[in-house]
Amino acid sequence: MKKPEKVSMRLGTETFKENAEAALLNEGLQQRLHVLEGITEKRHKAFSELPDGEVLRDRARSIKEEVILNLDRYLLRLEENVQRAGGMVHWARDAEEARVIILELASKNGVQRVVKGKSMASEEIGLNEALELAGIEAVETDLGEYIIQLSEETPSHIIVPAIHKSKEDISELFADKLDAGYLREAGELTRFAREKLREKFCTATMGITGANFAVADTGTVVLVENEGNIRLSTTLPLIHVALMGIEKVIPTLRDLNVFLQVLARSATGQKMTTYVSLLTGPRRKSETDGAEQFHLVLLDNGRTRILQDKEKRESLYCLRCGACLNVCPVYTKIGGHAYGSVYPGPIGSIITPPLVGLQKSKDLPFASSLCGACREVCPVKIDIPQVLLRLRNEWVEGQEGKSGGSAPFTERAAMRLWSFAMSHQRVYNLAFRLSSLLQLPLLKDGKIKRLPFALGGWTVNRDFPAVARRSFHSLWRDIE
Ligand code: SF4
Image 1 (tube, rainbow, N blue to C red):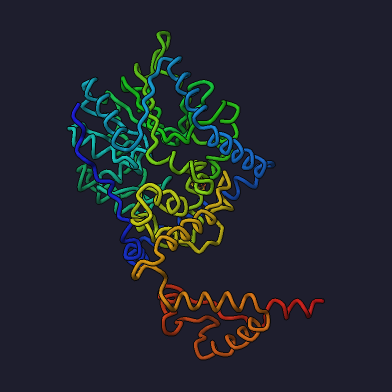
Image 2: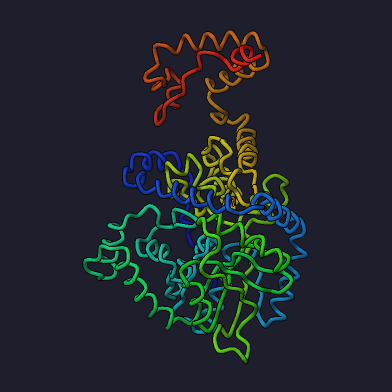
């Protein structure tokens, strides 16, 4: 079959700073991003009710560590067991190979319509555009993804793809694109989308999903969801294609038990999602429903390259739960589109550079305060700040000697002074006293609203905390 035309990844990481500034000025977006606080509260509650939450997170991390170190062995075992159950396994080195595999399957089976479950991997390879170019209708069936597809946008959150849209936006969208008329209530809008999608489920010949996990020992693909659309996408069409990043393999069903306990709690604050589907091969003769063909597409697309790097390989532990986005002081202010990547937020800032190249995404590793909130909530304890530092270091080292490449003179001079003061206690004490005096004309309501000269960039969108009147050491001396 002819290779599909090159499909754009729709990534705009180069304009991160401009995107972020526009997002900060978008009042509607700022209001809607507050929803994330509620999700984080639910997550906190769900974990606090779990007596051994920390133990489970440690266990989840150690399973991932073991799998990633022995990925080849687990993937071969997975392939063997998927085939034993009657399924087919396809290996895709990159996005283009994955698209070709899926398009060939569709062409061979005369597929005209595909229903899709939410899958970040399919966003990563630009699958919808490729299907469209081949004349195949691809319908997103997760409600959030359906809204995004109708508005011709990309998801702005891993778990809540349409978080940037209000109920009114969706009402207008449905009226405009689907002739829905005047629907204002969330229930009405959902019912309307459901009726539209039901017809698509019944007439599609192929269902395409991602995979949250694949169990090597049994060849089982595991899908978790709340809407039931994935269950319909995998049981009604004749063919089910699961597209999965190679890092999603886990050893056994016993390990799945660990991940299921931490995934839903981290993603939505639920103890368990409404549906958990475990699919092993296609429908058996004795079964009444399920796809007649089952295909598992294993996507590399740069993952084995990440695997070779001891620090960056942590990003392969990711469960795509979105918890790090919800607590990140940067993501919660600018939302997902500003990142210009399929994967936004803290995890996106460490996954995107290896995917699209550091040159194109150089601002993303710097889009963090390094506060560590992402590491605190991550169910597999990925040390995102450490990987961000590593990427920053790579970028700076790569720029050495290039004209205009290294950090501005003022920044370098400030860092040298800072380093000198930190390693000479008397100088530090003197600098501390001087700064607490020099800041006085700049203080307003206990904060510095505008830093002078080249430092002004720090205070364009936020205040600078005032230097304390007394240092920690001096307070400590009082206690002693
Ligand atoms: S890095 Fe951790 S918290 Fe963020 S999406 Fe991945 S698993 Fe979830």
